[in-house]
Length: 298
Ligand code: HEM
Image (tube, rainbow, N blue to C red):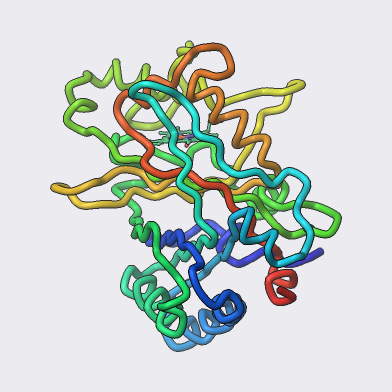
């Protein structure tokens, strides 16, 4: 079985970095940086005890196609969704760098080292540093990740393409959400629980999950089987500036992302995720993270 890139399967440390880039110059030089990344992280992990640095590199569709390695059957660009106040913009990007570790400073260091030789070839569209917040809560103060697949085996089943030319690869979805916490905190706890579909203190699913709650929108069954994704999202930001959730997830099929997004943004049955009244997506893109072997062969 082809080897998945290191950031995808293990449960992550408390800090992460998410960088979306456009390639504007020498693409061979950028690819070489990508190919050297996992080795340089392995050396850093030897020097810095308990750093647990892991990364994944993923590519946007048009850049991937320019590499002439064939295209995974389902690989589509992110489609803008919604309307009025509730929208999911498509903001694109050629390259996604996702790093997680136990140290914020090392995530910064990794990006600085990565960019130094290719600064002229790359335009950074978004650079966001995430951090574990309280006991793994989103900034709405609800626990995020309860229903995420837990074992390595189940995470592999959900995240990785099983066979064919792209085995060991994974589709990635990224959306940066900016929360409106003053509006959120005007709701009482019971109303907030109805928006999420779970209890606030301990993340227990409500007996009667409202159809327009977040869980009501994304807990989707097809032919009796729940659609699953592996989420690596973390809160980010500053109190007086933008803050919210950097949503990122991996899956062996883009279908699961599309089904969840269409359900959240009112395309499935006209119902919209009530949570989206309190948070707004400011970015949205799909990427493909090839296996380690395929990355090395580019
Ligand atoms: C569940 C928060 C965006 C997919 C949850 C839960 C929370 C949450 C609190 C319940 C606990 C859990 O099972 O993790 C948020 C916030 C978001 C966001 C604050 C953005 C601001 C998204 C997006 C998707 C998504 C964009 C997919 C397109 C899921 C899934 C579950 C979930 C699949 C598990 C549902 C289940 O099986 O019960 N989210 N989420 N979330 N979320 Fe989100």
